[in-house]
Every structure is written in structure tokens, then in C-alpha cells.
Length: 118
Image (cartoon, rainbow, N blue to C red; front, top):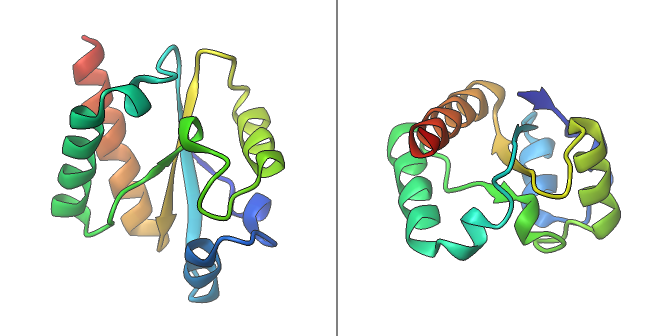
């Protein structure tokens, strides 16, 4: 888990601007060999998002598979991937909120994905 807030300080994303404006952060985690899974398995992605919202109050996450989108540019996506050393088959999952909630959400996401990979 890494704090990548600095990459998004000048982002055009309204969501990110709003969260950063109230002192929030952008945290991310890399999942190796998981590229495409969240984009292709919509039921799993939605189930994971609902679990995150139910347990943390955060209404979802953003994966590099979805980007560029949501006001996040291709260059910001590439900076995130570089920060994590993400390869072609890896995905980086981002959570945007206050630091404690974001950490809790990413810990939950990491645990859920690890269980799926077992």
C-alpha cells in the first residue's frame, strides 16, 4: 500500500479534487497478474465494491484497468503504474478518501483478492 496523492494534486477529476480539498488521500495497492479481472468479471467487481462500501463507507475503488477515465489522465495512470512498478499483467487499485478509511478499504480489498487467488 502506497500513498500516491502527489500524483493527483493537479488532477482534473472532480472526485479526487473534492477529497483532496478536505484533506483526503489517494492510496493504492498493486495486485500482480490480476490485470483485466475487475474489468471482465463485473459481478466480482460489483460484489467487492459493495463489500468495501458496507464495511468502510467508501463507495468503491478505481483500478488502472478502467483508466483513463473519471478525470484521470493516461499520464497519471502511467505515473501510478510506474510508482508501483506495475507490469503489463498487474493492476493497481486506488481508493480516495480520508487516510484511515482508505487504509481500511485497501486492506479489505487485498484480503478479498488474496482469498480469490487461493
